[in-house]
Length: 533
Figure 1 (cartoon, rainbow, N blue to C red):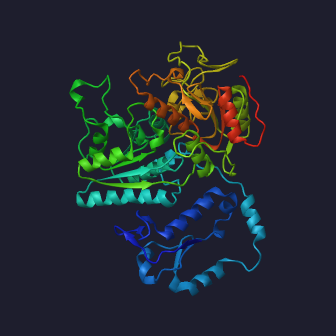
Figure 2 (cartoon, rainbow, N blue to C red):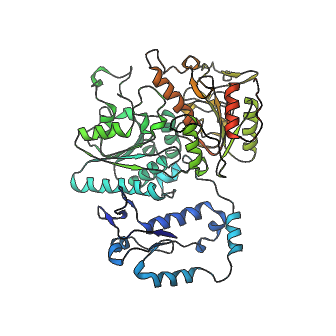
Figure 3 (tube, rainbow, N blue to C red):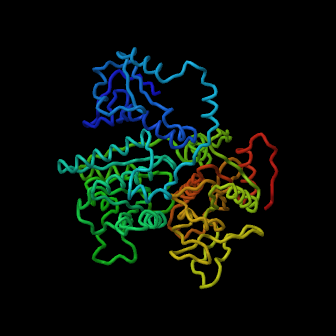
């Protein structure tokens, strides 16, 4: 049941799925569709309800609204999982509740509901094929659905009235940006609308091509890179969905770009010009390389210079990391990416968080989770040299060495090596366990348990973090890269790595003082021992 204090609401842009309410600056989802989404989500993720879908119903009650004030909301079709009543229909609302609620005590039903196994979230990559080729697989909730409908409305306007506008969807990790992107691509593809998906991530794009387009080449061709639009026809597409847009670079040109194509045009301008409705999905805290510049402000400025309207939709709800908003806030404060200082971790029952004293313990912990049926990966800051070429017939060299423990980085390149998957599949192929992933192969992906190794490039000293750029082996950092940029990018790197796990995260630092600090935050009531490993 969704209770609303609204006195009135009306459809936004004649779209009844989105509502304009005086109390809110941005459009919100029609409450009929909102409760229907909650019901569908519960049936999809609670085993008890999945086996008895008829036992759930959804209703919205606008207890301050008149029928006249909410009449436009009724344009959305009602169903057992989505009904709407206003204050004027209070009697009907009570009768509806009597028809749904048993006069008998509900304790046993509540126990069954609470004890039911929660089915794991559908991982993005695993369902991409059906999502794009067949039908919608994801349930979009609240602001996710608002973002989805905002884009579809913009597409309708563009096709009907020679219109062009920009849409930006911003949110932290796990808020569903890529789910929205694939849901949009699937819907537009099914409608025969010219749309493409683009990212600045080689791993993400190659994985999308492999999984979603396993059987049909035309599906593979839906997935491009940001630098694929240097010579694109102006407004040649209806929609361009720019996922991971925080990886937009200043220019698409590189050392392989032909002289004739070196126009000096900004990459963000190329992407906006390529489609009637360019859509940007981003998280500003995931900028991890010098030259990446995908921010809301940059996009709004570029749109304004072209005289285009730019709509921004913010995502807040957390669907990764166990759905724990508390964990995401803890990470941001831990890394000083938000003000307020570090705080003790207070378990909320949604996500697991552990700290260990050795890499051996970290790997053993993850191996045990895999034996329980969970997926798991190890990742680390870029603090060890990376052997880029492995001679044929030889195993990957164990570049990541910590004391007596040594493991290889993930494969560098597009071919499997000695049973290890190519870089683009490290996060999704079970054979990726055993190699250590870097931020460039982990970004954009998710797995159940994430093991993160903090290297010597980020250590805790006294009362603050200290970044040691000399400890970083990342070749993207040049002598000309300012200290402030290196500091911010290294913190962002660990923010990305710490937010890949859907079920939990286990942490290890190569620095003893840092381990002590982490343990005091994660297990504040335990006695702290310092290991010299």
